[in-house]
Length: 122
Image 1 (cartoon, one colour):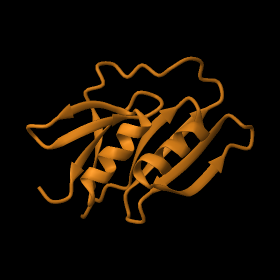
Image 2: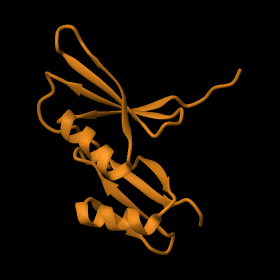
Image 3: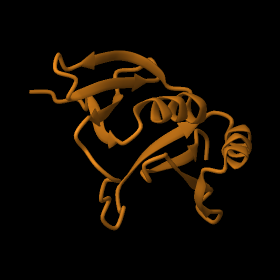
């Protein structure tokens, strides 16, 4: 047996705001969108062209923000131009934590999920 990670799901409160964030901040593209016939949910898969995807789930009946607990989990992305990515994220105002000693930083999406940014070559 050979298992491969297919996607990670995160629930979002404002789907279009999240889709735009992931496009602008990480260059992800919308791969597919599924809407429930009754309008109760929308699933949007975002990806970088590889096999791994992020599923953004919007639930019509969800009220208020999601409880992320201590937010001790994250998704990590490597980037080929770390300095340009840092500049973009600084301009977007989404950098939430920097670890200069380790040469990485985190950005925060509109729902408070942390995303780690790592240079491709360390």
